[in-house]
Image (tube, rainbow, N blue to C red; front, side, top):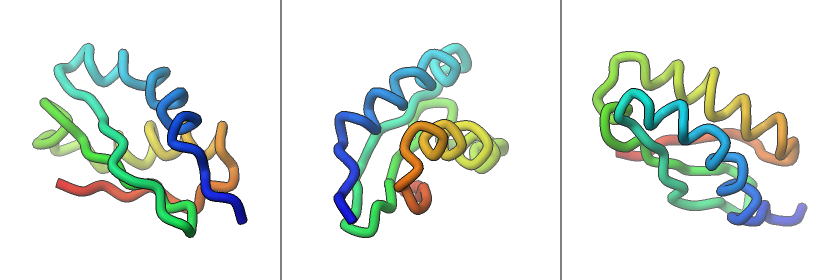
Length: 78
């Protein structure tokens, strides 16, 4: 299985960023594993937000998996 290109992930993240930035947050790509597990870091207001898990799963992960179906899952690091 080919590893997902970071550029492709950044393209999708760039479509999501404006929505996060409206509320003072952001997302940073940290890594892509050989198993196509994408790791991100939530920044700014998103980092401490009580709804950040919903943002991660329902927002970011859903958008990434729609555009990059070979992605296995999304993980977040502090």
